[in-house]
Structures are given as structure tokens and as C-alpha cells.
Amino acid sequence: MAKEKKENKRKSETIITIISACIIVIMITVIIMIGINQPQKTQRTLTNQTEENIKFDNKKINVYFFYGDGCPHCEELINFLNNLPEKYNKYFDLYTMEVWYNEENNKLMEDLVAELGKKIEGVPCLIIGNQVFFGYSTSMDQELKKAIKEKYEKMDKFDVYQQYNSKA
Image (cartoon, rainbow, N blue to C red; front, side, top):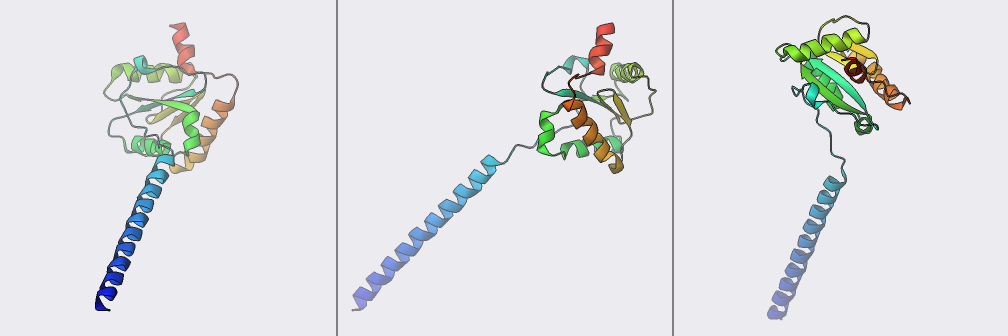
């Protein structure tokens, strides 16, 4: 009888071990599947790009971001752009150009802003279509989202750089 109890106890322990292992495998599988199905977040950074980096995609608009290396408002603006909902990724490509230490980028910023009939007011300077935004505060968030979406939805994908470049 004692032998039978030991054998039943061993069988119960084996069954519990197998069930526990199955639960662990199922949990790992679910975690992996959730991770695979999550959309990849676009990380936009303040990369020091130049005119040579600019490309055109008929399905997106180009947004030009002129910044100063070390500028806290520029960092805040890139953080805002990083935290836009995923649907915005299909709307635009971002070109980030440092202007405090890069004379060519500074000249390009001046030329593009002048092309739009404006004067430089500092950095960050964000150009979306024919709109120019200087500085950054969270009070601008809705206006920036609206500008990106509206420019994307317009049929005439006006790009100030294309216009400027066609005159050169």
C-alpha cells in the first residue's frame, strides 16, 4: 500500500511538472507573439543630414527640421515627433540638419525660409509644406500634427526644397 501511495505521488508530481512546463511554454509563446505583432516604433533622431540626403517619395511629404547641436528646444521637438502616433509614419519623411556648426545647412535653412517669404527667427526651425515653425513648446503640438496631416492629404504635394532646387 505504501508503494502504491509513493507511485501515485510520483505520478501526480510528474503530471504537475508537465502541466507547469506547458504553461510556461504557452506564456513564452504568447509574449513572443505579442512582441511580433507590435508595430515597430519609428525613432527619429537629430542626425546631421545635408542636402544630399533629401529624397522624394510621391506617397509622403518631406518635413525639414533645422536644429542647433545642444539646443534643448530642438531636443524637445524631436521627442514630440518620436511620440507621434504610428499612423504619422506614413505621412512624412523627416530631414534633420544641424545649423550652428554646419554652414551649408545654415545657408539652406536661410534660403528655404526666404523662399517661403519669411525671416529666420532661430531654432528649432521646422518646415512643413509652405509653413514654417520656429521654436517649440507643447502648446504647438496640435498645430504641428494638423499641419503634417493636412499637407499629406493635399493633392499638390508642395515641397519648398523642390521649388528652391528647380531655381538653382
